[in-house]
Image (cartoon, rainbow, N blue to C red; front, side, top):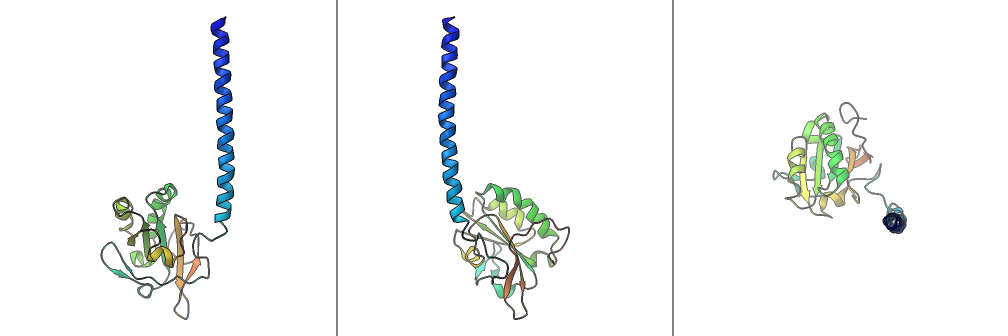
Length: 180
């Protein structure tokens, strides 16, 4: 009987410890929810109707890339190799871009982070897009107003020649093309 009493007491202590830890986790989750709510006050990327900023960068193949070199609808994808949602969204982006009107000439993918860590992303994206690898706060991220990953935007030229966002959260589910 003393063994059973000891065992029940031990289980009680473990349950009490578990309860204390769970309450601590719930408290931290509430704090993080409040912090995320404050961050969400700023848009995570350019919004519909906003003009894509200027950039002057080069792709992984050494090609120069500026807004003036892009015509028609342009699909922009911005990813980070340290972002789990990016790893989930990347295959859908590649498939969507593969069917894009204009092919790789109308798709620009940016990988934000260390070049070595970005190698797998670059290998997959270079089949369907102009790929840029940059550090946080680089030219492409700044031009697109990126504050969250992954971000997928669609931009088109206006009558006066400006490159303007027409979709700030591309669903990546349309069967073909980029045209709306």
